[in-house]
Amino acid sequence: MNPAATSPSTRWALVWLRRDLRLTDQPALSAALSAGFAPILIYIHAPDEEAPWAATGASLAWLHQSLLALNAQLSELGTRLLVRRGPALATLQALAQATGAQAVYWNRLYEPAAIQRDQQIKSALRAQGLEVVSCNGSLLVEPWDIRTGQGDPYRVFTPFWRQASARLQTGGVLPAPSALPALPAHWGSLAVADLQLQPKLGWDRGFWEHFEPGEVGAQGMLSAFCEGAVRGYKEQRNLPDRVGTSRLSPHLHFGEISARQIHEQVAALPSMANFAADLKHFVSELGWREFAHHLLYHFPHTSDINMNPRFADFDWVEPNPEQLHAWQRGRTGIPIVDAGMRELWHTGWMHNRVRMIVASFLCKNLRYHWIHGARWFWDTLLDADLPNNTLGWQWSAGTGADAAPYFRIFSPAAQTDKFDPQGVYIKRWLPELAAVPSAWLAEPWSNADFRRLAPDYPAPILDLKASRANALAAYRGPKQLPVD
Image (cartoon, rainbow, N blue to C red):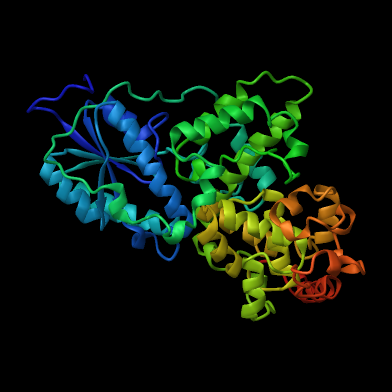
């Protein structure tokens, strides 16, 4: 059908958007159009339905901007986004009745609460006689399609990705529609502002100096990466003082770009010998995203509970509120840790190498349960993605899908010397250390003149060497226990 034309006999279908806020490579939208339906694009705000991991903080700030960007795109195509508040099932039922929609399309989500909710909604809508179609708009491979030879889900990345990557194909990215049918004016909608997603007091102002939410921003970020940072990616990605990564994670989380789009554009780059390894390594990072979804789908309890049962009775330290607050706000007295936490607070994002450092500090040096870090990241990260967040924190704590994790304790001093030797990253986020020689920044407290040069910087909240020894002693216990 001509998507721009409607008549009294138009067959309408609801296209329920969630974290797939784009028009290119949009399987649910494309499927509705291919079936001859005129699509009604709807966003339903029902955060409580994804509890206990409902979006908060920085994620909501991004969502506000992303919905505005999508609505602007739709306006150019002749239509608009309908915005409603939940509950989702009642809203879809009411809208189907009001519009005469015969079908509902959506792209799948893979988090435990969303899966349960969507299954219930699908059953209820079908019982009412509506056609319901769900699509894969997020992943390169479905979690249930990759199994070990014994038919079990994978727990180790390398064999998982070996099998998954063999299934990847280039091509097949769905084009965006050139026009969409206008919706009748009496089909009402909330304004995006009515959802009250923006943080109070302008906390998010620093975010938009670094990111442009929406499909256009996502495409621009990918193009910039392919033209620049992809060359040298394998090594440069570990250096936080420069843009050596794609920074696509927030766009991926909100579905402003698909993993398939990224994979296809990167795969189309000329695989010259001098950066073939960079391309391979970047694609493997897409693989880690797939693996994170695979693990959470098959082990849904791991968003809150250790994946490895031998840590059920591990001797975590009860958090000291002052120390936890110091970690959250970048006031631990450990420069590389504090720089990362302040970058997060100001930009809503943190360099991946530094994420591992600050997580190791919390879980190993402070020996606090990883859930305290996971919750803080969930509230402050623009790319707060439950599968990735769960995988990352359980990996850092040594409680997740990892064969021998207990001895992995990142030394902040060694990490500083290796990945920020000139102190560029640290001084960018810790201006009170501007006068301190870069050579001191790994362990500034060991220099007698440090306090004179940086009187406002806090003293370390713990002794790194002693805390490392304590962590090793605590972790050696569960290391000896069998894995179920």
